[in-house]
Amino acid sequence: MDRRSRQSIAIISFAAMAILFALPALGIAQTAETPKPAADDVKVTVDPNDPTMMIIESKGERLRVNTVTKAVEKLSAVTANAAADESAPTTAAVAQDEPKEDFYAYEPGDEPFDTRLVNVPTPRKVPKGTWNMNFTHRFSKPIHPLSESGPLLLGFDSMSASSFGVSYGITDKLYVSAYRSPLCMRGLCRTIEVGLGYHFTDQTKRSPVAFSAYASVEGNHNFTQEYTYNFQAMISRRLGKRLFLFFSPAIHLNSNGQHRFNPRPEDYYPEATIANSFKLPTHGASFGMGVSVRITPSLMGIFDFTPRTGFKLGRIDTLYDDNFNVIGFKNVSQPSMGIGFQYSVGKHSFTLTLSNTQATTTSRYNSSNLVLSPKNLIIGFNLFRRW
Image (cartoon, helix red, strand yellow):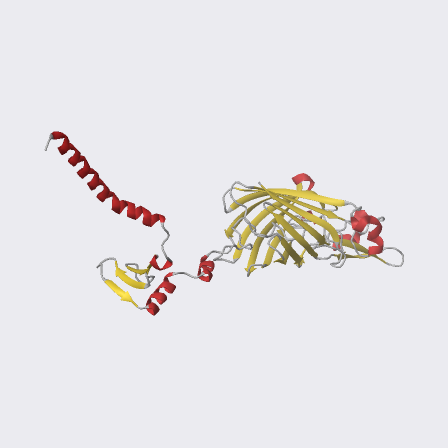
């Protein structure tokens, strides 16, 4: 056999071997491209009771394979279906595992209530490094009776008093505040209040009670004279997700200091010396209480009321005899009460209020400076903003 014949035989042999090696690959490719019947599908699941066990289903047969010992066990249809049902979580189970958003949840410092209800202060937290502004506005004409307030647009045309203040968080517990009221009447005029507060506990998921303590000094005529000293506790209790109860007792030292609210003989002509024998208490105490209800996550209904003892801000009526001689005096005073609706968005809140007082400093909010009974309420509003 010549050299050319031997080369031809070698080429043919090499081609035959290449075809033989290529046939399995061609068969696999063809199999991958050709859809298999549903009966040939292989389904693999993990036993939920033992992660080392796998359930394999193929061509109607079901096998349990131990991935550690490599042992294989043939399963009946009932056993395999039960294992598959246990391993595949239902839609309901998955839905239960997904956390639901709680629209009534909040973090300390983001309490849904404002720093005051209508008049009564609350233990809302002042976080470290934040500036918090409060603004209160009260008109003077009560809504009742409507025959009188109607022509004045329910009191919106009447004289008003606007007070404002700021507080700053030194730490997450300690804060300072300053507040000014423009009210000016006998014994009370252009009052500035400076104070220091401390948060002992905050309302959290574990603790439904918040407690703060506050001490302040008020000075008339832009903090230049006639000082009053306040010591107050502020407590709130959450009941469920919507209801909050509040209690804010306070002591007011020197609230009638220098007897500045007492009648004076020189106020009358001729001088009424009997005024020297009529003396109001020098100090006072108040027991503010209230409730707020979350109607929606952003809307709250609020109510507060403040009983008092000791000195009570009000009006002194003069008693005369038939000859118009002064024979005595009577102190007329009414406790403060307020209702309102508060709407909050982010770091803002707005409260539409109905109250019987314009006084909002710590020693004065407990009484009606207008000497209005709780049924004679005036329109006002509170604003809060945090930076």
